[in-house]
Image (cartoon, rainbow, N blue to C red):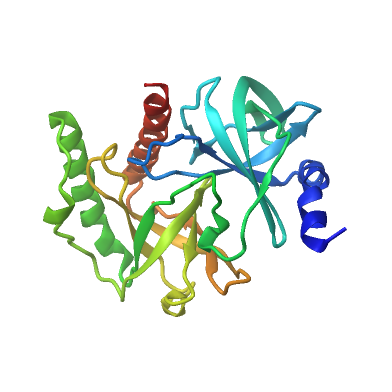
Length: 280
């Protein structure tokens, strides 16, 4: 059997291994042909697997769940080593499961009957299923306390825009920044329980280190009417086969605890808007 066909046929074995080892999968809401919103991918633990369904951790961040309805169409992503597959799925139910840390909410989703193997030659290995990831601007935050005032102003701006039904015009953006180093841009790979994963292209990752926290600007307009500012620290990194850096970033609200609920709430609103638009 040719090598590429062999790797494609192994997806069932790999899915079983992920479940046995308590690994994770990634999911995004399938928006179909709609292109007015970027996709958000969440990374979740796998709790169980049977012939027709997969039991996964309910998506969320920092203790807050994202709104995902029964019947929501999903795109699943499974990665083992250098192999990566994508598949279509659907939420078929919700459950509560016992874990080492107590009861946890879970989603039961339809298991794949076929998958698509993703190309190695694209950043993030997207596929013909058409996921489009948000871009993020990042700056090394040289004096962390100087980020607090910007985050507070950002919270006020977004709250006012939501109250008045307005949306900040990208052409009018005036970016006030704390004390930072040179900017680089990345793509938002996924959202996890306590942070985000970034894909930093090989052209720019030389400016990234794990010494400083990072000040990040995430544009989720129009649902979030102005870009979100937040602080995060590098938790781990690795280089992929194309020499891009995957960086796991842990949210850091140590200097501004009030910003935590606001940021996670806005991300939850964005995920909820995807389901609402899909149903419309």
